[in-house]
Image (cartoon, rainbow, N blue to C red; front, side, top):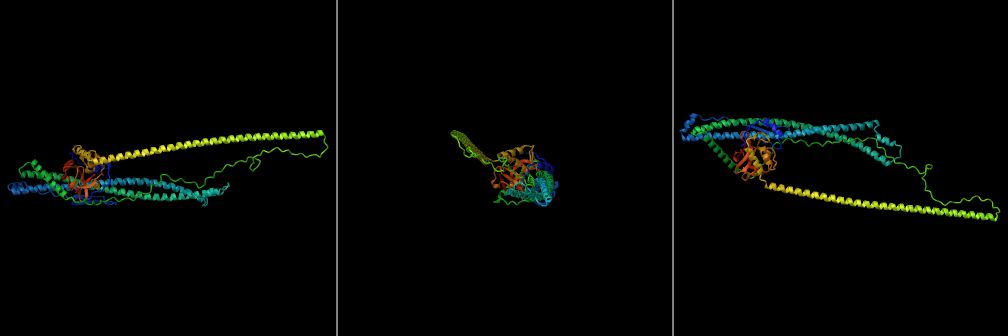
Length: 581
């Protein structure tokens, strides 16, 4: 059996803060309390600590009374039964104190978890509230700039003024679009300001509410710690009182029966085991057809949903002045001397301008022959010029035809290249599509394989890894019980089962009440190896153990008993239904 060790609840707080806690419900009651401390906050009751009234020390028979009873068999039997009843009653009293202490420890674990959550929410809210303030300040600056611009221009957008005064060519569509953009920018700036103001107010209110909730959680946590310390101290006191009373009663039984203490201690242990077995059988027989409806434990008041996230980027303030319209380059006329477009030159035949003919005079034959020669020369020259022109036109046409042919060939080549590029792109896309499809199919196959493996593992899992770890840990004397501990050497009941089940790949919540709320409920008559069994006080679950089969369990019991294997009967206040994960 793992060794027993006591450790103050306040000291355990360090282990609890370092451990992994999961949201759950708090155990809230203990049997027959005489002093009940209920911890509440603005967000609801989160724990109920009960300190059972200490039983007055019973009046034990004197040595003379015991001696006198020895001479009368009937008195001897009656006195022995009375002494044994006192032992059994002290056991019940100790179990009630244990239940109260563990109940409040479970509640303290819950307030620890609530406090951690509330502190995290409050920290996030403070960060976002500061971010909302910076965002609001930046947008206010933009609005101030807009207001200043409008004020300096008599309420008129300076961008509109500069645009209307533009002496360039008037582009109606451009100016209309610009005015629409300016109006939209101004509207967007004002809308951003309204949004920023609303976000700022929402986050300030939310941060204040989160801070208040965290403060309430801290108050409840302190109250729960105080209650847990009180019930724990009462329980430890009962342990010492019960040990002393038990030792004295066993001594009286030994004297009464003229036996030794070892024999009487063994006899008492057998009597206790018999009583526990009878109680267990009664509980098994009384198992209801269906699990009892779990009464919801008091929950921390839920915070309102967090406001909308603050944008990471402040909207850029647009200038009120419009962007100058791009000016198109003006083509210079071909002729500098004329503003009208130049016309293409047209080749014309040279015309012979007739000179003013003098009054006909009488000519000789030689003169006529000379005139005829000149006319012939003129016609020959005109014919030569026409031929030269035709030659030039033919050359130009040939050149144009060659250029058109080259362009056609170039266009055909480019079209062919585009067609080839399109074909290559099509092949590339098809290859990518095939690769993507293959990747999807491969991922789907891997996922199916994982699911099948998980299903097989789940189907074949018998929690043997969890049980093996639990038994090994219980047998190691370097391991011990500490309220709220999370290992690797010290555990409480629920952190012990949580660590054990992790060995089988099963994730359990942190507290015993949370572990009872999960899984599948099964009646005690259908217990299987690896099921979890629980103890309850009133409506609160306060202890959990791992069922081993054959009426045996392994569990982290308490600081006095440590971590050990016991019979199922040693699970006090056994709940009628177990939980199977």
